[in-house]
Image (cartoon, rainbow over all chains, first blue to last red; front, side):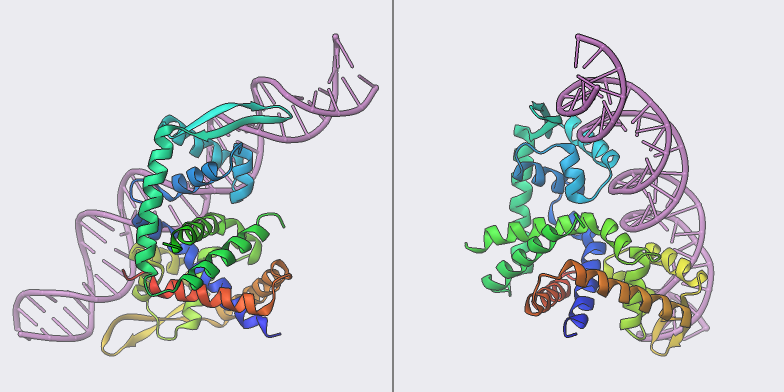
Amino acid sequence: MVREPALEELYQGLTTLARRARDVGDNLHPGLTLVAYTLLTQVDATPGIRAADLAAHFCLDKSTLSRQLEQLTSAGLLRREGERPGRRGYVLALTAAGKKHLDAAAQAVRDRLAGRLADWDDRDIAAFAHLVTRFNHGAGHP
Amino acid sequence: MVREPALEELYQGLTTLARRARDVGDNLHPGLTLVAYTLLTQVDATPGIRAADLAAHFCLDKSTLSRQLEQLTSAGLLRREGERPGRRGYVLALTAAGKKHLDAAAQAVRDRLAGRLADWDDRDIAAFAHLVTRFNHGAGHP
DNA sequence: ATGCTAGAGTTGTAAATTGCAACTCAAAGA
DNA sequence: TCTTTGAGTTGCAATTTACAACTCTAGCAT
């Protein structure tokens, strides 16, 4: 198999990435934890999303999400909207403050990331982004 | 800028990856935590590596590594060898048992990952692996 | 309608992962 | 020889997470 070495390299790279995440996250979006950033981003990108959907997306326990969403809610960044007919639970949405914080953090992320990838060309960045997205799509529902 | 949307997609993908890491790791290499797997792999791949080098590589604190290496050592997977002249600290190396566990885990990883990427072609996998590696190389020393 | 089932969320509890600060120890260098 | 500095350890606390047991209620079948 030609792909075996590549699989190994890939997994090693992904695990390294994962273990560095806290450090990178702290540097990249000051003021917003990695947890907060990922949740706000996902809520913003997925209208009508509920806590259970977030749990499935990130492969986390309901209880973990419950507590983290509680924090964001009482911080005024997130809001629980009414239910949707045909589905239980409540729908999540950003507050105006949440949207503002997320936008600022996203801008900071783009700037920092652009700096770190200054010597990459546009095609490589786009390819990398698409591959990561594709990888994440396949995962989570094995 | 054309790259702005790609940067955003990339970072979102990377953070999602990071937050799923525990779950993925548990599934991928049963019996070895994500921490243990990453450390053993790195020690195996980098002869003469020391604790401080690992800390730098993973952007973690010395104390974190100290404790994690202690666990692996007392589990009989890792061994502290003598010092190297001109450099302080001691050199880490896998024991026979550590090598055996790591090899088994790596095989499991390849199998599982191959299953998850069954519909990818070899070129995409290789490209993904190289991009991740390149990204990790750039990071950590800003 | 009535009642059962199952999905959504919360809370109690415990474990794992990590960082910071203060420390010891010994090697490098002046 | 003596000072500096790098490597590692330990005390402490915060964060992140899972599992289990619970409540509540919407949806379904009878």
